[in-house]
Image (cartoon, rainbow, N blue to C red):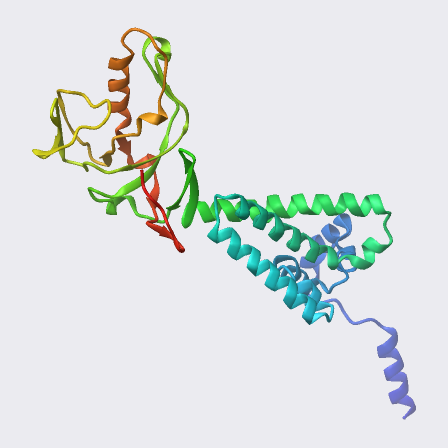
Length: 300
């Protein structure tokens, strides 16, 4: 019995041997000490493994602290704000809803730091709250909104009207008669580009001809593959063209032009409109929804 007790005392006295892979962790421990990552769990008053979910899921922090009812209410409010944002995207209610979503998210993260913030002065807490709002907005919601607009849908305000565009549409599936949204680069025509000008922006128009179609202009109208159609504003009265591969023929709205009254402005406008009518695939944005939820989107 004495020998066993001595052996146990020796085992308690001598620390366990370091494993062979312990040296691999030394850079991590050095980085952890230099960045003071040891204080992160205490700063947020949460175990480190719960931090990602508490930071990424708005309202979850309240549930982590044993307040499930408040957590569910906060998450429900966030969901309602997200629904308003999607339905009224492009309008003022969507802007208010997005601000509310960011505020709820930032407040949820602040709740994880409530014990640390309690020891801070009021002005420091206020400054940190504002800074956290900016961080959440710039690091989470700005990238999410960009991905939303790039991969699914985006609002475009054209001629005082908001159109929701399906940006997931595939350009090669666009057919004659479809309406498309496209980018417009800033350009100028005439002497030093001052007679007719157009600013950078977006346009919406109907595809009148696709790659390979022959478009002819006359005084009576214009024809696509010898099918006569009504003449549009500022269309040429003569000449023809063949739509190149990867292009569409979309006659633009004259309202996008800014004109200056001088000699030859009408001729310059006709030439400007003809050039603007060629839409390249690289300028394609998407196809406007016919309806967005219950709202019908009247096309120009």
